[in-house]
Length: 194
Image (cartoon, rainbow, N blue to C red; front, side, top):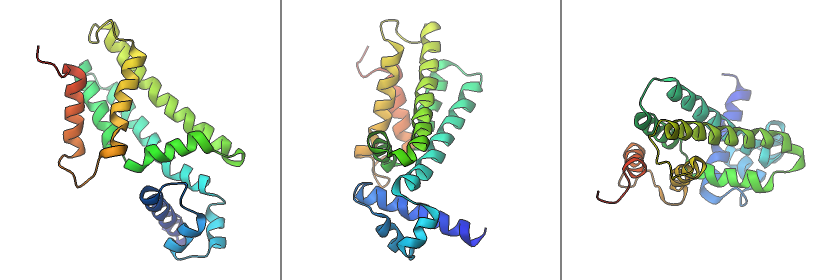
């Protein structure tokens, strides 16, 4: 790997770490440059602004999540297994800071990077639509209660999965795999005794 790519990777790693630790709004390019051990002017060579860096942190993550979701959907599995695997995929790709960073994208993207963030918003929407297709397919097959609107089910699933950003800690009591299992059980079986 060339020095240029190693430096770019280090900038991405330090930017991701600082955004996660202190929040996107609290971090400046000077902070990131200092963490990398370079001058701010040198950082501009790689990233002219924070939003450019943020894009390069989030885009590969959501793209990978979408690609894995597509692989799950292509497998010939029953609805419950597909749903469990899709939830596990979402959580295994999870980074507690991404949701907060994504919110920064949705609320604050600037004109000079608007095109990049339009792509990100399109990726988020494509992911939501894949979930909708899965739930609609389950509804059509009688696997999902007919009184539950598929779009509302999707928002509930994504809201539940994304709630990890406010409480999950890697050193906590449960692994992401265990949490995915509990989320799947809650969604597929409910919480009341039958």
